[in-house]
Image 1 (cartoon, rainbow, N blue to C red):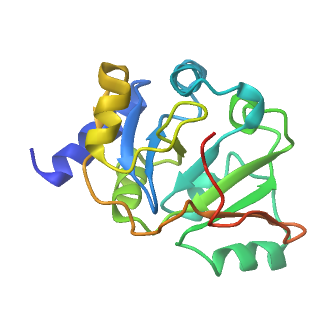
Image 2: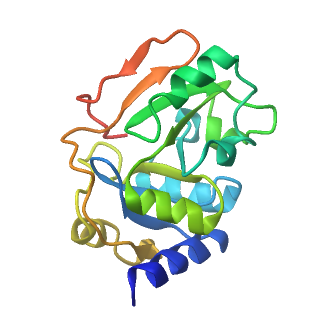
Length: 192
């Protein structure tokens, strides 16, 4: 199977409610369709993670985040766009349409337009933003390879997209968009 076919297959799995694993900037991520509550619940159960924490969404383009984020002041949006595509996650006010299973107990949602070629290709092929959470069970280190994902999750994941992570030693930084406050430096642990 070619890379293009693999990406297309992964996007189809996401659209059918499946869970995929894929390389991101620093670790492998688990992803699914953020609009599918059953897929998100399955993913959270795999991770042994509470719904209340919320999830990160990754996208290829800003417009793929439209249904999840509230309208932002132009200055805030410009600050975010200046860091994208890239390894910067922003926490922004959630739109009224953002599902609770994405935002958790928060009135915000975490979003990133990734520069990682696999993430870009997945979101382009799927035509939407996807959930991106580290490929690990609660309290365990995140997987950093396709093999580690297969060993940790086995057949509980519908497809593991192989590839190299983006070379970052640590997970992406998370910053609050409105205040600019740093929530997680890129050196903080992502064992959620």
